[in-house]
Image (tube, rainbow, N blue to C red; front, top):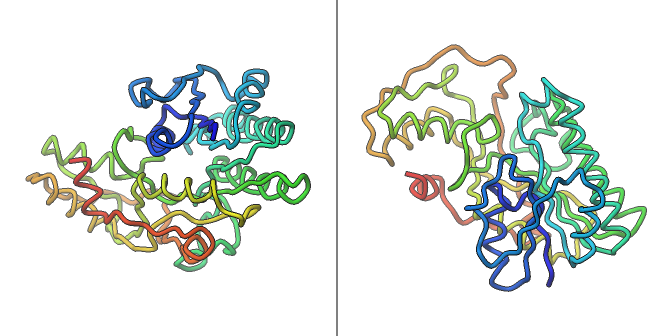
Length: 296
């Protein structure tokens, strides 16, 4: 098939491109504001452009059979500082993409986020959990998630939304989206103290980017469209355990030190992935320790 990956020079998008190029003709659309040309597989066609450019978007969507929409502004802090700018990239551009897909009858697989859940009532978190995002970024991703469903229901456009939990892996740059792994890894490799906010009992569901790519490929083929699926491992890792594992994997002598907790930090997060297992055939394969070894 002819496949378009928006944000294909970025962290997740480039790994998805790698997984696609052996079987499909892949076009990457990226403005290189955060992605890197070196990340893009040499077999992929590269179109430099902004997802907010409706004319360019229509051109590349029109040549595709399926679109993987990974382009986004993924900074929670940026969404707080500049909500209108973040909204323009994450919501307005997505709506333009869905309109182009509707014109050309192109299946869409869209990146959503666990940020839509806010502070969950309990864990694990099923897709039916109430949505209470606590940042403009979370609201934006919830809008993307809902637009995907509505376009399927109203216009019969095949869409799938994938709600990513804490994704990590090679090519990831440090930042609030990458979370603690990039920060801890840098500290460990430089034998600096590994700084844990709070007591370290907070839990996360860390999913390797290879498993995220797997979920996207399955979403491309599924008949269960118009739905959203959690993409995680279903496993719990405390931040303290993460720090110790990173120290062990890197052979670092770093001391683990605890600092003040961060305001607004979510205490518990873990994906319920039964729906993705049953409807998509998704099964995470990369353990946290093995995944961390790909970074050390």
